[in-house]
Length: 383
Ligand code: PLP
Image (cartoon, rainbow, N blue to C red; front, side):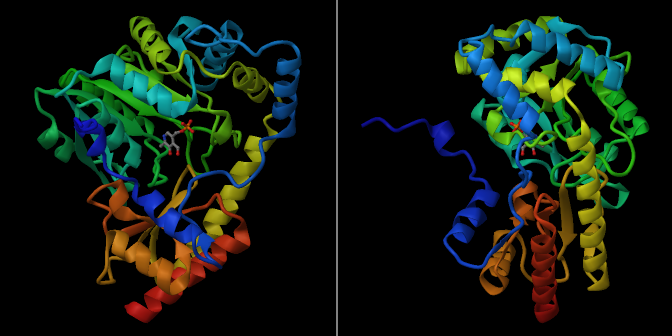
């Protein structure tokens, strides 16, 4: 038989899944490895979905999404980030993951290079490799709140680079790019004639500072901003995201989306409308909860002499364990086997974070603090 796809066969596995699958087979494990809100979708959103089904919203929608939702999203972004866009700039997708994939498909051909953050969300690398393009890492500086190292960016950009991907607030870093950083990124992109794919799926989860979208600025015709309902409204399973993009790119994305999934689920789209224009108390409450957990987690780590990077947004925290002689998956596996705490190994986010582990703050408080105590125990035993 002929071999199955070499490209797909060679795609790297997620280091997070690897730990999770092992952890699920064990007892008494504290799970800090996965990044998913630990609360139910607010009930008014579910009610809107039941109503949508009763009213017959159970069929295909147009590729780019329901007209009503696209209009609402354009208004939402105009208000939230002063974006100068309308519904023709909006593409609704099954989750941000699809929006990111179709953004890349619309821009990149095989063999072209895409800049991705180090450390950064592992799926960027996989998506790019899946499209037979080349991921190239640029460093973020942990000591500066994980903003890009512009000297390193100048070293890794080439004439084959087509896109720079950014993520603010960042996973796994919790870093937020301020206005000055975003303006520097826009200048860099202009200088090297690059598109920017800006992953802003954690835009609603900020506890220190303010979210700045690169799409807010004048020179935004090279910016594709990607958003999601998953994290802000605890809607990971509804699979609903969207992108705000230049109109000519929206047309290509809409065409590609049809090939992959036809459209996002009609029921989820109606639920998304309710999420956007219903009460925002859930989002505010969750921000407070994450901030409170973040403060307590950071204090506990600090009290035990561990170095952590306090996040400004999203719901993750990176812990620096470079004082130990293990790194990457070996380190995460030892933590799991010796202390029964599952964490995401730093290597899965890039090479620069190989001595770090990521914990998720989207975990119930007592579990989170118990998990951290186990990490501290491990460090105290092995330092
Ligand atoms: N981007 C980042 C940085 C993420 O962490 C995630 C999910 O973990 C996504 C995108 C995907 O979001 P969605 O559930 O909307 O596909």
